[in-house]
Image (cartoon, rainbow, N blue to C red; front, side, top):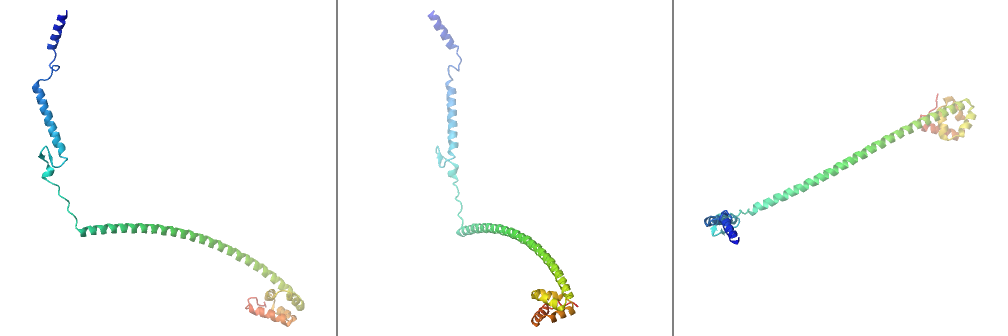
Length: 216
């Protein structure tokens, strides 16, 4: 039995595929050469990123060295610097003008608000003055009516009695009453007064410019 098992193993090995038995020597050598060629090409391509040489072969960079940029003349550099400074100054000026314009617009708006406030106050004052004038006119009319009534009463009285009544009043009121008296009535009352009182009333009537002059 053992002898037969060995014969079977030998037969199986002889019938195995060539792939399991390995590649021929010529094929292996060809693959090795291809790998070496690819490796050399990769090294050459990678060497283009560095100057000088790769595997003793000069590169394009060493054959055509880079040309240094030309330096600008000093005058041109000075002009360029001056231009940059001038642009910076103009920008600063523009910002200043923009800020000043904003401040001016805010000031104008504030002035407009104050102007409207003053106009509103002016309207209120005008309305108040109109009310005061109306009230004063009403008082003047009422006072004028009272003075007319008093003058009518004094004119109906005897001159001596009327003189005694008017002597109790202040000079302003007496003068106003004389303005509503008839000329004959006023003359009789003045004649009944003392010389001092008559002179004071006559002077007051003359000082009023005849505005409250004696009625005829």
